Amino acid sequence: MKTIQTIAIFLGLLAITNACTPKMSFLRSSVVPAASGSTNVKKDKNDNYTLKVSVRNLAEPRDLTPPKNTYIVWMKQDDNSVKKLGQLHPSGKALTATLNTASVVKPKEVYITAEDNVDILYPAGQTILTTER
Image (cartoon, rainbow, N blue to C red; front, side, top):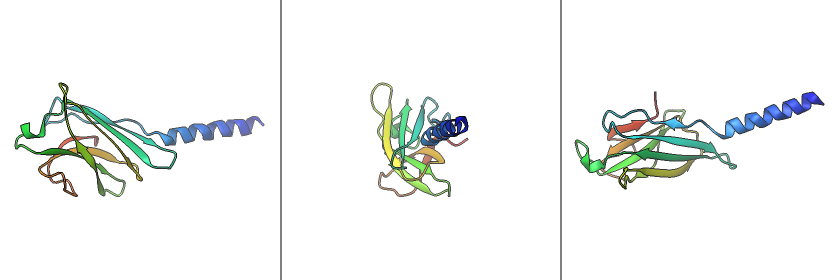
């Protein structure tokens, strides 16, 4: 009986561990050194991954050299394909921005690029922040 309880506890802990992935912190940016942030990834009850991207001190894209129009968040998947997650709009005194989205695939890496056009399908601009080590 104790063995069954031990196995049940182990499987329960394993399920909890698989439901949440660790926070992915962005590395320091050489383009916007003051920028910082992270991405929290969790698996929901439908086996999708919810992502919450949060950044601070992200300079307005028009203040970059060369100036850009927007920031786009991307994720790299295990097969190295890239998926566009959405747009960031830094605002307020702390220039904060957040993006909440979902994916059917667990992200391998999340990164932010500065782009001229919000309608692009693949990253073309300079990478501002990345979680890749």
